[in-house]
Image (cartoon, rainbow, N blue to C red; front, side, top):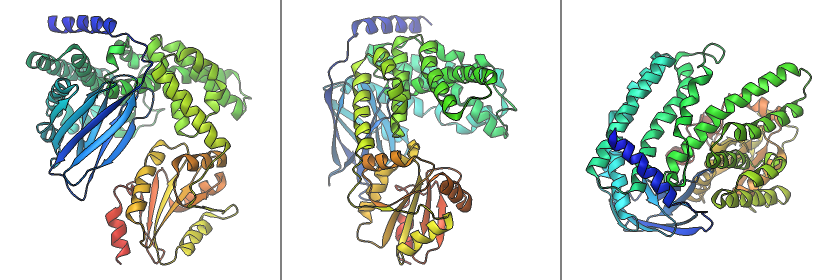
Length: 504
């Protein structure tokens, strides 16, 4: 206990000593070497964790010796995932040049973490961070998924909270072991504590949904008490010293937003709707937006966290190619979001998206297909007839679907690999606005055959072809027969199946 009290005293002192305005962005270089890499998997991915935003993904080709180099800009310290076979976190600061070397053969985190070597800036911090990750990923508190699922399914609310407390005791013991064995600096200790605590806050947040799903219960049949998410407030206050914990802090921002603030907003909405029976859909949407924005301000007393949650709300709308919410509450964004590392990327993103919406410049090799009056069956017949003798990879997506859009770079990469072969890439946009669809195509710069289905056509297509969720993919052979369909046919996992159809 004394050790933990001392740690939090250090945290406060470190926070006071590192206050800054984060007004200047600088480059970070992560270079390295993947030993024993698989020539058939010659790429490494770096995902930079951005507070309030989706992580920035950088994919780099390994050279013949396994070397790679990635460069990105950042205003603040943050961590980043390096992924090859499996992944691990590295700690970065503006201006850092980091070198990392590891064995690319293992596919388990503990095995790859044992091989890591660092040099350059922050080398001691990253060696210590790797030791903490090795401790965590080697412990049943991480890998015993069966025990976790058993607790989620069988324990009631009170018992599950006790179970989480027991897990937290294990994590606290792990943290004490770490600081007793490693002479880590204050920033690394803060990162380690936040990284371990993320396990607790995520498990707390997801329990109600996971418990219902595990037991086949509906929302109306079982729920947690309103006070269930109050422990999220125990993570406050948020300070600059925590910025290094980009992964864990980003997760916490999302959990606080959607599991603490949003339920309160929804309850307010229910109370208003109960008194107003004649509210139109547009009025209801405006009311919800207003309550959502004001709810973040009202229920997030921590000013730094409030800026991050507001940024997340607006940036998530941008990810759907939607600017309406931001434009309606631009004055709120301007008044409340002050930190440059949040404000500047947010307003820049808005300007770029606005240009896409007003002047969409779709990829020159994209083929826009007009099927305004077609039924679902006619649309599918048109796709097959237009691509006779070819294998067809059909992607069902929507402009508001984050996972759909995040797969598009992988789809573009798959197109490159399949260039010159008898395969057609076809994209069906469902349940979206046509104006936003065109803006999304301009932003994504994706080629292939592009179909837009209106609301009626989308409903018909979903029903006819049993599409319950998106992204959803179809593989169609050269004879026009659907051989496989589902969300599992992601573009980075389907190459072998396509090649098998091509060889038939």
